[in-house]
Image (cartoon, rainbow, N blue to C red; front, side):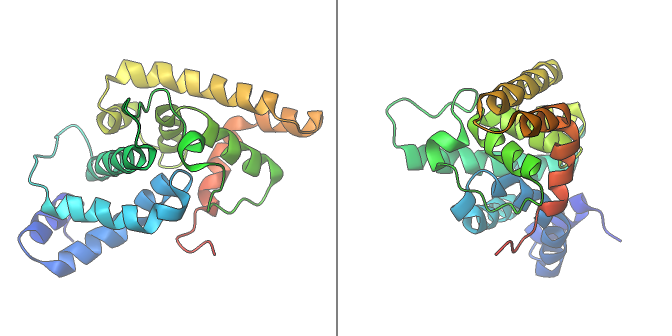
Length: 206
C-alpha cells in the first residue's frame, strides 16, 4: 500500500485515484483544523487546501509527516481567507488576533458536555496561533516538532506558546459568567475536555 508521500507524488502526476485516497486519509484532520475557526467557510477551505497540495511543487521536509505538510497549507489558506475577510490596512497577525474577532462566536462543532462547549468558546477567543497549537496537540496528537513545521517557528517557541495557550484558556474560562462549579470542572479538566472534543468532530455536523 502506498504511503501518503507516494500518493501525493502520484496525484501530482495525474493519478486521480491516488488523490482520492490521499484526501480520504487526511480529510478529517483538515476538517478538524477548520471547523472551530472558519465555521461557515469550512467546505471551501478544505477544497482549497487539497487543491493547493496537488498544484504545489514545493519539496516536503524530511523531518515532518505529510499530515504536517497538509496542515501547514491549511493554515496558510486560513490566514489568507481571514485577511481577505478583515480587509484591514494592518495585516492580520495570528499571534494577536483571534477567530472570534474575525468570524464571531458560532462554531459547527457538536459538543456533548457543557465543559466542551465552554472550551470551544474559549478557544475562539484566544490568539489564532495559540488556538491552533492547542488543537494540533490535543486533537491531532502531533509532536512539538511537527507543530513547529506547521507554524513555521522553532520547536522551543511551540513549547512556550503551548504553556501560554493553556494559561490563556484558563483566563478566558475564568472570565466567563458561568456557575463556579462548572467553571472549576472545565479549568481543572482542561486537557481531558480538549481531548474529548476530538470525538465530536464530524464532517457533517448538521
